[in-house]
Image (cartoon, rainbow over all chains, first blue to last red; front, top):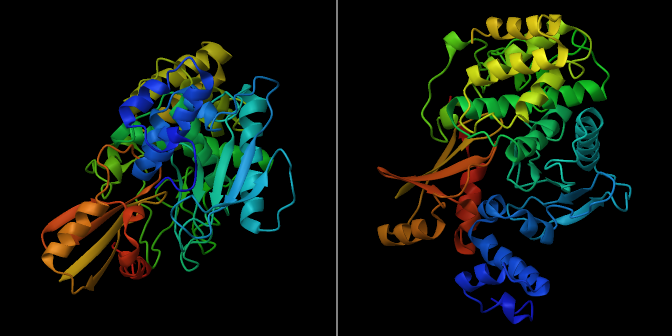
Length: 361
Length: 86
């Protein structure tokens, strides 16, 4: 077990002692203990470990940069070589050296990572996922033909797709922005991934993902297609989701059937809080707040991020947004923030109200 | 004995299943399930997939990363044969 390193702290210290050593006043011992604890935990569940870690522990492990100078994008991209563990991943790109990459998937996630970082920093002054300069870590070629992308609390992970129904999950910038925004949400309201709060978690990711793409493409609310993952799901008539018309991302797909998203609260889908129930339909009922945002942004006109985006970012970062927030809580907060930002009887407040009325929340 | 692998969840929430006959004994399967059982306290991964192994009436949440080398071929075969359940 300990043949690959030679510091005793890495090998023989039991967990309860490591916990104490991580709090040591001696920085060298504390940092070694953090690293050792990380190695031990990794075999059990590195995902659980990172979510439970303190900011100091994350800094030692490089998850948070620890740099206190001017905000600068820090990003790493790895090739996971079709494996499901991350220990053999090969570094392809590091923003500090900015070396050229040839792989299309690597180019996609670098562009998506940069566009996402720029979006949050240039519009809201947010320095990366945690607002503390966290390195954006992206892993491509995860598993064999995996039809998915996810955020594990530390990194964004992308599969290649099966090549039949799904293309690479790096193919759409909105998917990359979606995953990065899961990290932002985790560091803000940390919405519980279940039922309505889970659907809001998904909706914030769709909303910011679509705005990141629209801004990159310089599309206004009328010229944008409001489709999520139109290149990931193969076939030009298909997309993973539609924010403009939830439930129409794909219709009568030969293998997937029809997009199950509702657009309105009266069609809310009550599913069990299990993985097979999509944790209460978090990817399904997100259609409802997605539609409210779309209508609000469309009625405001111009670019989605100029007005509606500012309102929804204020909601996402509002300390009163509870982890178990319901749709109506986001509705109320979005009206409050529209009033604060644009005035009590402003057209923007009216547009926000129209959005939630359209979604029947 | 017939075993069935079930994958659920994801960016687009699909349920996919694959099954195969194995010559493993009840005892060997029980031992394997003990080894690969998912940690119930692990946080939910945003857009992550979940995996279950169904053996008869028994369903166990598993972590595919824990599958020992000697069973990897079996699991890879099952993963390759996953089909969407509508």
